[in-house]
Length: 365
Image (tube, rainbow, N blue to C red; front, top):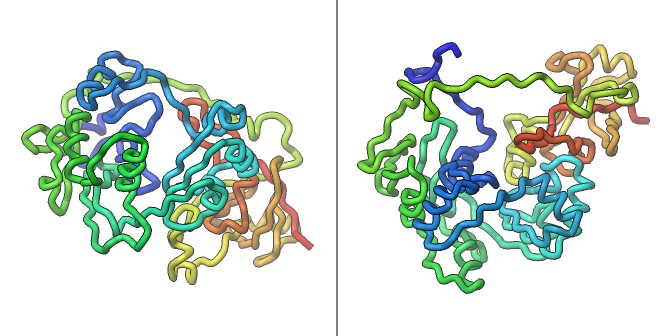
């Protein structure tokens, strides 16, 4: 609308939460798309994939994570293979997540450490860290960056790609060993905007897609128009979250959760480093005005309760939060903060609503 596209220093830049969210989306992790954002419901897209892979590609749209949990509870989803995600700590409404996983016939977890989720798995596949494998990450500016192995995997572990290869072999589908250069060649055949991506072309700084077949990579998109032409504007009216709609006087505060610099996500990795000396617990930020109303002082033990459960946190009075709003992190499993968070999801993306949870607080005796 303001013309801030198609020129240096402008553009639509998603603030990705992890270092390869962009790359995962590019490779087709969304259930309605294959690699390169091609819609699997489109016969032309499926024909393209069939030419690349040599097999027919299903046209049914898959399930997003909340839908997987619902299908497991209903007995429709029988098995789940989780790679590098601690669902029991990071997904909302943890009690319901645990019940959903318990309904599966078979749960496989591929992990670096024995996480909360790995502890309830039927099979744990020991994976390697990024120091122990080669591949690519793609960041929020579409830059495909080469990652080079610097040490051998620990005994008994495998890079993720090699684990997938070995499972495929055991299921009767012969595969060569995992090779990042060969994988990139396959991706280049499947994804139009990766057409010119090759392992030896990435160098130290990588390439921003789209990469043309000759290896050149225009850095700026939308110089003259969008892929769909001049663009399209849509208006969506504001809709109040069900968590706050209606009567909620018993839970007058809004709890929002996030991260701090010293820890990454649920802390599975960072809690095993000296970072724990910087931040060794989750605390609850409370505005002094709200704290005074409940007789809460710094370092007091506070019970936080939602419609789904309760937990205890150490209070930290702060004007970094507004009156009526509380903040905490989810880096330490003993706090179990996602026992409180809701099962409300954005209906388009099915993204959990971690940021708006109606809660009550009280100073614990």
